[in-house]
Amino acid sequence: MFKVIVLAKKRPDISFETFRDYYSNHHVHFMNRLLDHGAAVHRRNFVIHPNPDAPGDYDVISEVFYEDRATAEATMNEMADPEVHRRRVEDETHFLIPASVRVFLVETDTTVFRPIEGMG
Image 1 (cartoon, rainbow, N blue to C red):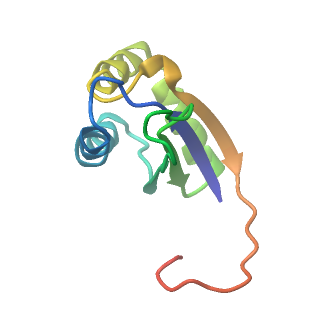
Image 2: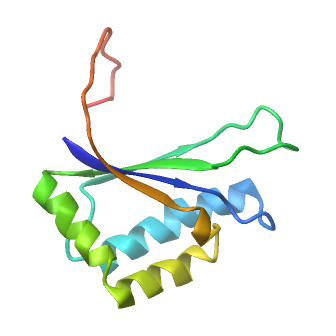
């Protein structure tokens, strides 16, 4: 399985709830409509900071799953288009720090010791 991992930091002037709501309920749907080769699955892992007064480097670790490497690479090529990039960054300014975004294309390797119901 191929996926893209995205690390990002929320804007400091908005609440964590606002960040999470905008990302989950607007941005992922906006990007899916914007791209010809969208994600098959988009999972957001919101970081739980033990000390809210000292947040870490990132507030979310997103996993964007694709059917195959060709689809993942086609999406990455679309993301490099100047107009797509401009529109993505414009939307990101509503909830995160665009300069904080780090993107990695990865191939997964999983070991299951005990299956967890609901995880496919």
